[in-house]
Length: 308
Image (cartoon, rainbow, N blue to C red; front, side, top):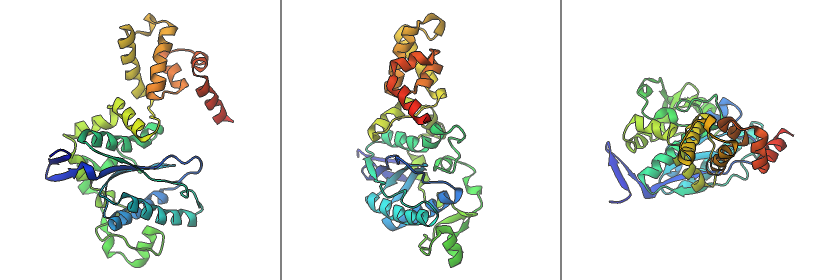
């Protein structure tokens, strides 16, 4: 049957999987402290239980959200989560930051799309911050998948906690935490409310999972376009693409054999297909930054305005 994939006794019907994403806020920062992340995880678990949605992957970014969900009540999940979390932020010095946040839903219709969407979600933090590990971080569910140490993390059930302890978890009088929720110290354990096993079943192996997250760069461009976002890649990921384009266009990847004009012609591909910044183009192609700025003046002006 098309759209249904079965492996390791887990079933994923593509017609019920969606990528919930929000546009980046024009101003304001959602997460400012570790406690903000912990409270968000608690509210996510509550929203998933109340809406009947399964969380498969997530990324909690400083100015937007990404969720891979399974079920038919994605809007209810989002509204329930945002309502509670917005109240928490308002009570703790960050009011109104989520007021204009709107959820957008991208249906997932194939196994390949599922893999690339999951990879896109958990890639989000480390492609914009060099201090974040791609597979172990507070912002995403990345550490759950294919992690043999996961069963050894010490956790305790929320079911046996007192009302006061539960209020500390939710930071409110609303203590409707699911009984299945587990805690690691003061943090809700994502493994107790994220269906990471289903995600694992959609990849052939841990190696393939790592490939999609860290290597399959061109597929990430397609996902970004599908979501209406601009892809972001560090130099380390753009360099192999740059060399590939040079070989395809001029039959060589040796910079000494290329003219500045030839390097600039490749710059257009990197700019428009992979959203490379002017500074990245100058570094990767070994072209003076003024020459790149002259070719892409709008990007140069945007960079200068951010300095002001």
